Length: 230
View 1 (cartoon, rainbow, N blue to C red):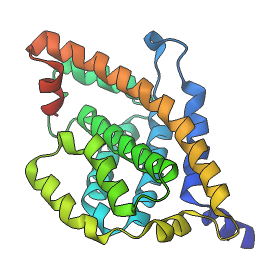
View 2 (view 1 turned 90 degrees about the vertical axis):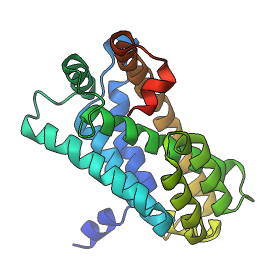
View 3 (view 1 turned 60 degrees about the vertical axis):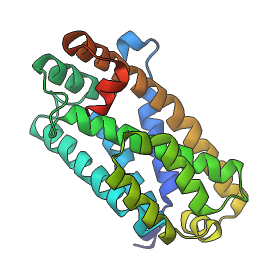
View 4 (view 1 turned 45 degrees about the horizontal axis):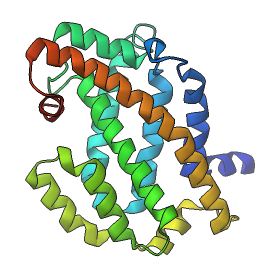
């Protein structure tokens, strides 16, 4: 029983890195053979929810969006795990159906989950590379780089107000660390997490761009216009 409790309390950073090690097995040799296994991808996204809980109430809206998008993909996957085991095939299916931009599409959910993962990587990178930066500033800059360009003014304004609720950097670091670990260990775990997730996100962005090119050819318009339609 004691061992079970220890496993349950494993820090989110370490757990997420372990999940990414599963995803890394599917990293394509060339983009023509890209494969994004649905279940491992969703497992990583679930761990990101736990990570956002550490940031505090300022992440409530983002957390809700991520949770809803995860649920949408999980519902489709669970309806037929064999058919929907690969996110790339789901994107192709909805592209062929012309349903990618529907509010309830899985393509839309996948895109916003990717943007959320971009935010997490940017935030962790800033906290590690600029340790003197305040948590509030790090969150704001990461948000401006990754999510703000796609948010409307209402969402952006709400986020600005919520920034006042973030914990300080030291408190946040302590929340991420295992009780028996030190800051240098946390830094190593952040490095490991980023090094595994960043290349995977690059593959996802390439896949999304290729999927988007089909929409551009069919509906016309620039790439940025098409992205803002999601």
